[in-house]
Structure formats: C-alpha cells, structure tokens
Length: 260
Image: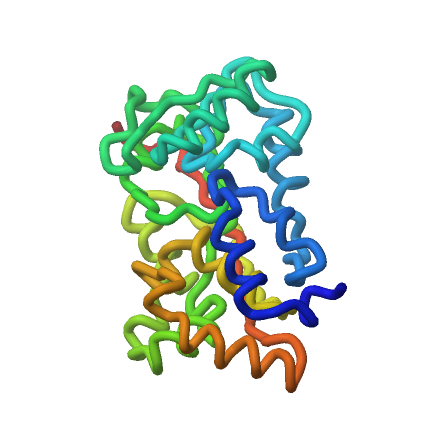
C-alpha cells in the first residue's frame, strides 16, 4: 500500500513514534524529496579536511555528515549540544579518531585562540562569528553550508500564517557576510540556491516538524491535528505539498595580518 493510500491516523501515529535524534533523514526516503545544492558541500568539506592539520566541525549533529568525508586531519574535533546527538556522534566518530566535545553552542567555544586552520559547519542553528574568528589561525578558513532565509516557509506559513518581513529575512546570506566581516573575516565565496522540496504524505510533514524543531516552534501533533488532517486531505486531492528550502555556501578566511 502506498503511503498516500494509508489513513491519516496510521501515517501520523507512525511518524510520531519514530526517533528523531541525529541529522539522518533517511526515514523520509519515498516520503519526501529535496533538490540538493549544486556545490556538493560534503565533497568540498572533505577536500578541505584532507589538506588541514587541525579542524573543528561545529554543531555536528549526530556526526553523519562528518563521518562520510573519509579522510581527517591529524587533529579533528566536533562539537554538539543536544545530549542524544552527543551520544550518537561519539559512537559514530570516536572509532574514526574524531574527538567529540559536548558544548552548549554559546560563546565561548571551549578551545584556545588560533587552535584550528579549518572550521566547518553544516546547517548551524546559531553562528558566533567572533568565536569562529578567534579559534581560527591567521590564514585559516571557515567553510559552511547554512540554511537560508524563508526556508520551507510554505510549510511554516501553512501552520503559523503569514510571517513578517523581518522573520522572512532571518538567516539571509548578506547578514552572514556582514557578520563574518564584522568579526574580521574576509568572505571569499558566498552562493545561494532555492531548492524544490516535496512532502508526499502527512507522515513526512510530522517527522520533519518534529526533527527540525525551529520551523514550527513547540510543534505537537495534538496542537495541530486539525490543520494536519486538512493538509493530509489536500495532498490526497492535489498531490505532494511543494515548498522550497534555501541554502547558502559561505567561505570566509582569517587574514594573515589578523591581530589577536
């Protein structure tokens, strides 16, 4: 039986029971699709890591992205704040020689000045530019893929209603450029893409909102059950719910003449 032919209650109950720790979205295979950015972040990250001597991956999640790059520098450290993800990342990354540090994702980073020649992050929730600049060595690089502004806002606004222009512009790539420059970093690459995303059944929507908790803050099935049922019926009539995720790649370098 296809997912869309199953009952609302069955789909929702299944999606509500699935564990959501880590940053692995494989449960959504066959239930949702998302275009991938053209720049291939994990590949770019792997190329930089292979040339680095000491690297830090901030907000590593369950460590899945970092674990997939294959080759690490002599010193490789990852930070994560959510305890279930810390445990997951430790289990995955320690056998690969990566040190996992539990960190609250608030300044300061628990490392000395100029400790790393490469800092990476994929989809950080918060970005503390001053701390990134502090722990980078002169000539060092920050390479990251960030979630952009108004990402999947078709889904956000379905549940929360129209959002203000201020909210819609949060996470704008130009704001990241300004933040990096204010911390003394030189932005050498900044690329933005809007990517088609489809939710094929209501279970995919429930799982996504449980996992990506900042999309609809405080989301629970109980609170949004009526709206979820309406969306389930809409998908049944009109096909997949279409939204657009936004991503940007940013590369920023610490100048050689940077002062401590």
